[in-house]
Length: 527
Image 1 (cartoon, rainbow, N blue to C red):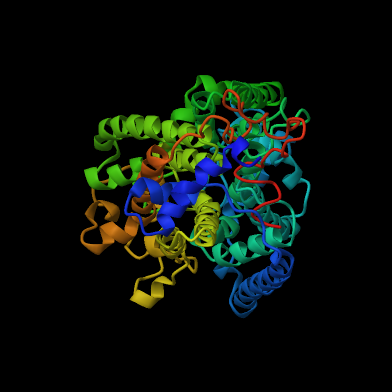
Image 2 (image 1 turned 135 degrees about the horizontal axis):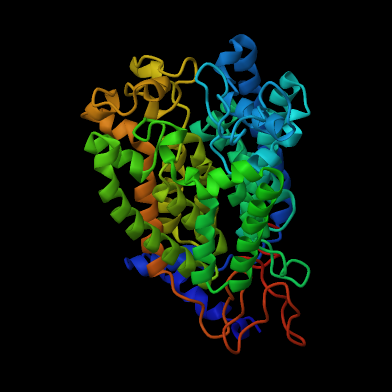
């Protein structure tokens, strides 16, 4: 019966890799092959894994609380972005003095938040979405922001493991907590919490949306939440061409519908600001968010701006490279999806968006959290199948992600703190321009990022360089991974090959086996 669904045909690559085959394609397939059925000891292992996860995550949170208690607040939180969000909500509510009805666009002509006069740089719908924050006292809003970020991180990793085929149970819960304990101390996660950003929430929403099983109950709305996320920050729009190339036309249409809904809401509630944003070209004004060449911008545009020595000089090369990388990224993501590896598809599309976006601040790279957990999960899968070499490479990849994006104290290498007490992470080792200098003087050749050399070029561009390496590896793996054979696994949420199994979540053939989860048996990898 197993061979009827293509299991037997997919075991051969794993066996070959386990026997030391040197073929790169065999090693890749041994990792991407279906997980084996659970052993009789899975329940006991799940208890121990859950206990280990609870203890590890509790220790991680305890370390954060200890740092917050023994140091000033500026070491763990300076929620300027949360302040911008809250101010946007107050303007939507027409609360003076932030709201000025005499301004042509009250939201975008607002003088800005704090000493830096930070403007509202998000689509109009974002201000509407942030309205509930404006109803909460400021101190309580900061506490809620931390709590929501922690929950969102756990949810994102839970959904990630679900997308990898783990069912709800002790193993999945333990793995979620263990992974969260590690990635909690990565710089993008800590920086998101420090600033009161919304990146973890949007990431969890997108992963939940795109890794749902394709059932009658979920089929009609899948993709809509991704469109809503794009209405708050535009980068998630990259998932729409990926869905189209993956032939998930319904999901792509729903993502477009969700995004269109946010635009319509913006015009209904904030008509003048919406006209300024969409018709006045504000959504194209990347420089409005800050200095493109600043160290905190870990995108291809940021890298090329620092190398070129000015914002204007970098634009032609960035546009050309962005088109190539964007096309390759969505194509690789679609190939993963058609091969039945939906979580890798989502991560590839997310990496592509981070690379090609004009602005990808360091805290946007929270996608490295599910990336590290995914690599670790594939390492465990390969090890259980006896593919030692593939398991080692996946383990190295997981460790490398955590290592590059970890909260390394810059004081260890004698670097001066450039962001107050939040100078954590490799990218903050080199000197960087004070953000207000760009607002005061515009682009200037004396900005320090234009004069990096030696190791500063490596550490200062660490995220984008690591992202390019990871993107290249994913693109290569997508080429080496084979499509499911006749009767094999269907793409996540898609139709099975001719003569194969029914759609995921559908009814199995008479007397046949129940359909698989996103990347394995729904009963298989966990318990």
